[in-house]
Length: 241
Ligand SMILES: C[S@@+](CC[C@H](N)C(=O)[O-])C[C@H]1O[C@@H](n2cnc3c(N)ncnc32)[C@H](O)[C@@H]1O
Image (cartoon, rainbow, N blue to C red; front, side, top):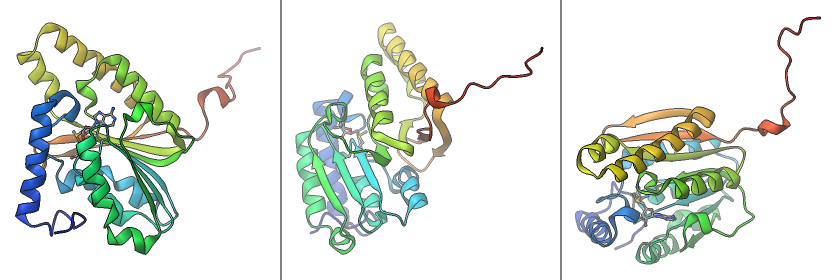
Protein backbone atom coordinates (compact mmCIF):
# COMPACT_ATOMS: atom_id res chain seq x y z
CA UNK A 1 0.00 0.00 0.00
CA UNK A 2 1.54 3.32 -1.05
CA UNK A 3 1.52 6.43 1.10
CA UNK A 4 1.45 8.80 -1.84
CA UNK A 5 -2.10 8.19 -3.02
CA UNK A 6 -4.43 11.20 -2.65
CA UNK A 7 -6.97 11.34 0.16
CA UNK A 8 -9.60 10.52 -2.50
CA UNK A 9 -8.13 7.15 -3.39
CA UNK A 10 -6.59 6.13 -0.09
CA UNK A 11 -8.43 3.10 1.20
CA UNK A 12 -10.20 3.34 4.58
CA UNK A 13 -7.47 1.23 6.25
CA UNK A 14 -4.85 3.84 5.31
CA UNK A 15 -7.01 6.72 6.51
CA UNK A 16 -7.70 4.89 9.77
CA UNK A 17 -3.99 4.21 10.34
CA UNK A 18 -3.24 7.89 9.78
CA UNK A 19 -6.05 9.00 12.11
CA UNK A 20 -4.84 6.61 14.81
CA UNK A 21 -1.29 7.80 14.54
CA UNK A 22 -2.44 11.41 14.84
CA UNK A 23 -4.60 10.61 17.86
CA UNK A 24 -1.74 8.78 19.61
CA UNK A 25 0.61 11.74 19.04
CA UNK A 26 -2.08 14.15 20.29
CA UNK A 27 -2.41 12.06 23.46
CA UNK A 28 1.36 12.18 23.88
CA UNK A 29 1.63 15.95 23.40
CA UNK A 30 -1.55 17.87 22.51
CA UNK A 31 0.06 21.31 22.75
CA UNK A 32 2.61 20.59 19.99
CA UNK A 33 0.44 18.28 17.88
CA UNK A 34 -2.31 20.89 18.00
CA UNK A 35 -5.22 18.72 16.80
CA UNK A 36 -6.72 15.27 17.25
CA UNK A 37 -7.12 14.60 13.52
CA UNK A 38 -5.32 15.54 10.30
CA UNK A 39 -6.68 18.36 8.11
CA UNK A 40 -9.28 17.48 5.48
CA UNK A 41 -8.95 17.83 1.72
CA UNK A 42 -10.87 21.14 1.49
CA UNK A 43 -8.64 22.81 4.07
CA UNK A 44 -5.52 21.45 2.32
CA UNK A 45 -6.68 22.94 -1.00
CA UNK A 46 -7.19 26.46 0.39
CA UNK A 47 -3.85 26.27 2.20
CA UNK A 48 -2.03 25.34 -1.02
CA UNK A 49 -3.82 27.83 -3.33
CA UNK A 50 -0.81 30.19 -3.64
CA UNK A 51 1.19 27.34 -5.24
CA UNK A 52 -1.46 26.97 -7.98
CA UNK A 53 -1.61 30.77 -8.40
CA UNK A 54 2.17 31.10 -8.89
CA UNK A 55 2.58 28.01 -11.14
CA UNK A 56 3.88 27.11 -13.69
CA UNK A 57 7.19 28.80 -12.84
CA UNK A 58 9.45 26.66 -10.59
CA UNK A 59 8.79 27.48 -6.95
CA UNK A 60 10.58 27.20 -3.63
CA UNK A 61 8.00 26.00 -1.10
CA UNK A 62 8.29 25.37 2.64
CA UNK A 63 5.73 23.28 4.54
CA UNK A 64 6.06 23.64 8.31
CA UNK A 65 4.31 21.23 10.69
CA UNK A 66 3.32 18.63 8.10
CA UNK A 67 2.11 15.98 10.58
CA UNK A 68 1.06 12.80 8.77
CA UNK A 69 1.19 14.58 5.39
CA UNK A 70 -2.46 15.37 4.67
CA UNK A 71 -1.53 18.79 3.22
CA UNK A 72 1.71 17.45 1.69
CA UNK A 73 -0.31 14.97 -0.39
CA UNK A 74 -2.30 17.86 -1.90
CA UNK A 75 0.81 20.00 -2.32
CA UNK A 76 3.14 17.60 -4.16
CA UNK A 77 1.05 17.09 -7.33
CA UNK A 78 0.73 20.90 -7.63
CA UNK A 79 4.50 21.53 -7.67
CA UNK A 80 5.65 22.89 -11.03
CA UNK A 81 8.58 21.21 -12.80
CA UNK A 82 11.96 22.04 -11.22
CA UNK A 83 10.48 23.19 -7.89
CA UNK A 84 11.92 22.70 -4.43
CA UNK A 85 9.92 21.62 -1.37
CA UNK A 86 11.32 21.67 2.17
CA UNK A 87 9.13 19.90 4.71
CA UNK A 88 9.82 20.72 8.37
CA UNK A 89 8.33 18.61 11.14
CA UNK A 90 9.32 18.60 14.82
CA UNK A 91 7.89 15.19 15.73
CA UNK A 92 10.39 12.41 14.76
CA UNK A 93 7.65 9.80 14.18
CA UNK A 94 5.74 12.12 11.82
CA UNK A 95 9.03 13.03 10.09
CA UNK A 96 9.78 9.34 9.46
CA UNK A 97 6.32 8.87 7.95
CA UNK A 98 6.79 11.95 5.75
CA UNK A 99 10.12 10.59 4.45
CA UNK A 100 8.36 7.39 3.40
CA UNK A 101 5.62 9.42 1.73
CA UNK A 102 8.00 11.49 -0.41
CA UNK A 103 10.42 8.67 -1.26
CA UNK A 104 7.84 6.75 -3.28
CA UNK A 105 5.86 9.66 -4.73
CA UNK A 106 5.56 9.23 -8.53
CA UNK A 107 4.97 12.96 -9.22
CA UNK A 108 8.38 13.89 -7.85
CA UNK A 109 10.30 11.72 -10.32
CA UNK A 110 8.20 13.07 -13.18
CA UNK A 111 8.67 16.78 -12.32
CA UNK A 112 12.28 16.60 -11.09
CA UNK A 113 11.18 18.49 -7.99
CA UNK A 114 13.67 18.42 -5.12
CA UNK A 115 12.06 17.46 -1.79
CA UNK A 116 13.68 17.27 1.66
CA UNK A 117 12.21 16.40 5.04
CA UNK A 118 13.87 18.19 7.99
CA UNK A 119 13.14 16.89 11.47
CA UNK A 120 13.46 20.10 13.48
CA UNK A 121 11.52 23.04 14.89
CA UNK A 122 10.87 25.48 12.06
CA UNK A 123 12.18 28.41 14.13
CA UNK A 124 15.51 26.53 14.34
CA UNK A 125 15.72 25.71 10.62
CA UNK A 126 19.23 26.62 9.53
CA UNK A 127 19.04 27.74 5.90
CA UNK A 128 19.85 30.61 3.53
CA UNK A 129 17.02 29.49 1.23
CA UNK A 130 14.15 31.93 0.61
CA UNK A 131 10.65 30.75 -0.35
CA UNK A 132 7.87 31.78 -2.73
CA UNK A 133 5.26 30.04 -0.57
CA UNK A 134 5.25 28.90 3.07
CA UNK A 135 2.40 26.61 4.17
CA UNK A 136 2.22 26.48 7.96
CA UNK A 137 0.31 23.82 9.88
CA UNK A 138 1.66 24.93 13.25
CA UNK A 139 -0.81 25.20 16.16
CA UNK A 140 0.24 28.79 16.94
CA UNK A 141 -2.59 29.41 19.40
CA UNK A 142 -1.07 26.73 21.68
CA UNK A 143 2.29 28.52 21.92
CA UNK A 144 3.61 31.30 24.13
CA UNK A 145 3.55 34.86 22.73
CA UNK A 146 7.37 34.83 22.64
CA UNK A 147 7.40 31.64 20.53
CA UNK A 148 4.76 33.02 18.17
CA UNK A 149 6.68 36.28 17.67
CA UNK A 150 9.80 34.26 16.91
CA UNK A 151 8.07 31.91 14.45
CA UNK A 152 6.22 34.70 12.60
CA UNK A 153 9.37 36.83 12.32
CA UNK A 154 11.24 33.80 10.96
CA UNK A 155 8.48 33.07 8.41
CA UNK A 156 8.64 36.67 7.13
CA UNK A 157 12.42 36.46 6.92
CA UNK A 158 12.24 33.14 5.01
CA UNK A 159 9.85 34.54 2.37
CA UNK A 160 11.04 36.18 -0.84
CA UNK A 161 9.66 39.72 -1.16
CA UNK A 162 6.18 39.18 -2.66
CA UNK A 163 6.06 35.61 -1.28
CA UNK A 164 2.99 34.22 0.50
CA UNK A 165 2.54 32.61 3.92
CA UNK A 166 -0.61 30.53 4.44
CA UNK A 167 -1.75 29.12 7.78
CA UNK A 168 -4.95 28.07 9.52
CA UNK A 169 -6.61 28.51 12.91
CA UNK A 170 -9.63 26.62 14.19
CA UNK A 171 -12.83 28.59 14.77
CA UNK A 172 -13.93 29.29 18.34
CA UNK A 173 -10.80 28.16 20.20
CA UNK A 174 -10.41 31.43 22.09
CA UNK A 175 -14.00 31.36 23.34
CA UNK A 176 -13.68 27.68 24.31
CA UNK A 177 -10.49 28.45 26.25
CA UNK A 178 -12.07 31.44 27.98
CA UNK A 179 -14.80 29.08 29.27
CA UNK A 180 -12.71 26.06 30.17
CA UNK A 181 -9.13 27.13 30.88
CA UNK A 182 -7.40 29.03 33.67
CA UNK A 183 -7.18 32.82 33.55
CA UNK A 184 -3.49 32.67 32.77
CA UNK A 185 -4.16 30.34 29.85
CA UNK A 186 -6.94 32.60 28.51
CA UNK A 187 -4.59 35.61 28.80
CA UNK A 188 -1.84 33.74 26.92
CA UNK A 189 -4.29 32.90 24.10
CA UNK A 190 -5.51 36.51 23.91
CA UNK A 191 -1.89 37.77 23.70
CA UNK A 192 -1.17 35.34 20.82
CA UNK A 193 -4.35 36.48 19.03
CA UNK A 194 -3.17 40.08 19.40
CA UNK A 195 0.20 39.27 17.78
CA UNK A 196 -1.53 37.46 14.93
CA UNK A 197 -4.00 40.34 14.47
CA UNK A 198 -1.06 42.73 14.04
CA UNK A 199 0.45 40.50 11.33
CA UNK A 200 -2.97 40.17 9.67
CA UNK A 201 -3.54 43.96 9.63
CA UNK A 202 -0.10 44.49 8.11
CA UNK A 203 0.22 41.64 5.60
CA UNK A 204 -3.11 39.82 4.99
CA UNK A 205 -4.32 39.44 1.41
CA UNK A 206 -7.27 37.19 2.24
CA UNK A 207 -9.10 35.02 4.76
CA UNK A 208 -11.33 32.04 3.98
CA UNK A 209 -13.59 29.97 6.23
CA UNK A 210 -13.49 26.23 5.59
CA UNK A 211 -16.65 24.80 7.13
CA UNK A 212 -16.15 21.27 5.79
CA UNK A 213 -13.28 20.52 8.16
CA UNK A 214 -13.40 19.01 11.64
CA UNK A 215 -13.22 21.43 13.33
CA UNK A 216 -13.96 24.27 10.84
CA UNK A 217 -11.02 26.60 10.29
CA UNK A 218 -10.01 30.03 9.00
CA UNK A 219 -7.24 30.08 6.43
CA UNK A 220 -5.13 33.22 6.21
CA UNK A 221 -2.88 34.31 3.34
CA UNK A 222 -0.21 36.87 4.27
CA UNK A 223 2.16 38.45 1.75
CA UNK A 224 5.63 39.80 2.41
CA UNK A 225 5.77 43.26 0.76
CA UNK A 226 7.89 43.68 -2.37
CA UNK A 227 9.75 46.52 -0.69
CA UNK A 228 10.39 46.80 3.03
CA UNK A 229 8.91 49.74 4.96
CA UNK A 230 12.32 51.41 5.40
CA UNK A 231 12.89 51.41 1.60
CA UNK A 232 9.71 53.41 0.92
CA UNK A 233 10.32 57.13 0.24
CA UNK A 234 8.48 59.24 2.82
CA UNK A 235 5.55 61.08 1.17
CA UNK A 236 4.59 64.65 2.06
CA UNK A 237 0.87 65.29 2.26
CA UNK A 238 -0.47 68.79 1.38
CA UNK A 239 2.67 70.59 2.50
CA UNK A 240 1.85 74.29 2.91
CA UNK A 241 4.26 77.13 2.27
C1 LIG B 1 -2.14 20.77 13.76
S1 LIG B 1 -0.86 19.65 13.23
C2 LIG B 1 -1.00 19.89 11.48
C3 LIG B 1 -0.57 18.68 10.70
C4 LIG B 1 -0.88 18.75 9.20
N1 LIG B 1 -0.28 19.91 8.58
C5 LIG B 1 -2.37 18.79 8.99
O1 LIG B 1 -2.87 19.86 8.65
O2 LIG B 1 -3.02 17.74 9.16
C6 LIG B 1 0.60 20.55 13.70
C7 LIG B 1 1.92 19.88 13.35
O3 LIG B 1 2.98 20.81 13.61
C8 LIG B 1 4.07 20.12 14.23
N2 LIG B 1 4.83 21.16 14.96
C9 LIG B 1 4.47 21.80 16.10
N3 LIG B 1 5.36 22.75 16.42
C10 LIG B 1 6.30 22.72 15.46
C11 LIG B 1 7.48 23.51 15.20
N4 LIG B 1 7.85 24.50 16.03
N5 LIG B 1 8.21 23.25 14.11
C12 LIG B 1 7.84 22.24 13.25
N6 LIG B 1 6.74 21.47 13.44
C13 LIG B 1 5.98 21.71 14.52
C14 LIG B 1 3.40 19.06 15.08
O4 LIG B 1 4.29 18.00 15.41
C15 LIG B 1 2.24 18.64 14.16
O5 LIG B 1 2.66 17.63 13.30
